[in-house]
Amino acid sequence: MKNNIWSALVGLGLLLSSTACQPNTETKQPLQKKQANTATIETNIVSNLTPKQEEWLKEAKLGEYAPETQDWEAIEAAAKKEGKVVIYSGSSRIFKIQEAFKAKYGIDIVAYDTPSDIQLEELRRSHKQGLYEVDVIYNNDISAIANEFLPHGLVWNFVPDTVSDSLNPNEKNPVLVQRWSSRVFIYNSTHYPDGAPIDNLWDLTREEWKGKFVLPDPIQTTTEANVIQSILQHPEEMAAAYEEEFGEPLTISPELIEITKKMSLLGEPNAATEWLFRLVKNKPVFSDSSGEASDDVGYFKEAIGMTTFSKMRWVKSGKYEWQPAYNLKPVFGVSYPTFLLIADRAPHPNAAKLLIRFMMEEGFKPWNVPGDYAAEQKIMEEQVKQFDIPSFDDLNTWLVDPSYVYDTKYTYITLYRLIQESQ
Image (cartoon, rainbow, N blue to C red; front, side):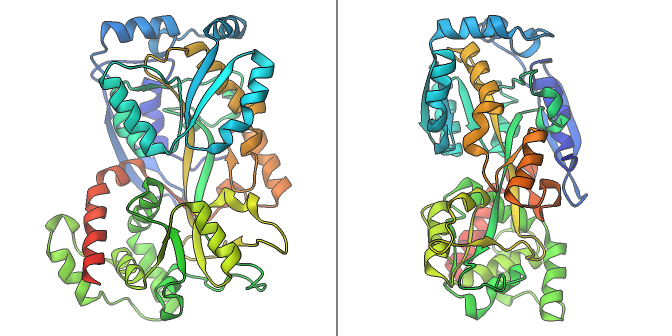
């Protein structure tokens, strides 16, 4: 079982999910990470609900008004009267379930393929203007959700009881996790048939890889920023990896020392920030998307890339080939959840519930690909066998820490910009 994930958020979720919503309460729980490191997440639980929110929650049967037993016959009947469901989706694969959902329930899915950060900005602005047009959020920006949107009552959790027993507690609270995604390092397996040409993240700072590492811009895209921030969160592991690779302790570059002196919030330089300094100095190539990064590695042979693990579904033998660098040290990627939530005052709450259940069950099919790990335990176990991939628990990735990436976002951007300017 996936027992290595965010126990800190479970305590928060118990208050924010469909079973409770207590005002003016604060939680602070340890955040358990894969390698047994700990951190904290501190969040103010939603308070001061407006009368209109209370009225909507009561009608929608969410929050503290959720019944102990979900009446799916009644939910389906009400959903059919609503006639449609509107979803902001961070995955274009949402369009692949429209026909099946319509055939089964007679309900239209109105879908918008929108990146997670843009989804949340649109939801924030619309909510402020009193416009409530979206029903479901399919998103992976756990940092913003945990630290802003759940505490401020902009979204609500809903867990179908038909799948609840197949999920870990931390996949139900504070958000319903549909799948686990990862950004991973990849190489062209045709050009390098004997395995990955690098075995350590520090290899990417060597002269031979200058201008040959491809990734989406880690400043312009939230997911890539979270990945780099997650690496920066592990200076001890990066120091050990350096010493293993080069056989001597790391010496911090004088230029980096001068950069960090420019702003006290940047703190003392360490092995992780030194890795970032050397990586930027080695001129990585920025792609427009993770898909483009996959293409560069798949077609242009010598490049190393960072992309979404699930892009493995694009690999075609003899034409377009890459493989994950599974044995990369100290880590070969960063994992994060993709989750489903109901937007505050969704106009079609019953259709939203029905769609969420569908996407957790038979509607999961478009995401049943190598690299996307289903939260639903039975599906995940089948994936490991079908795709011949490591189990999620055995995957050598670090998990995004929602509190850390939220708290260090602007410090990271400042550090990155100062490093760029120094080149």
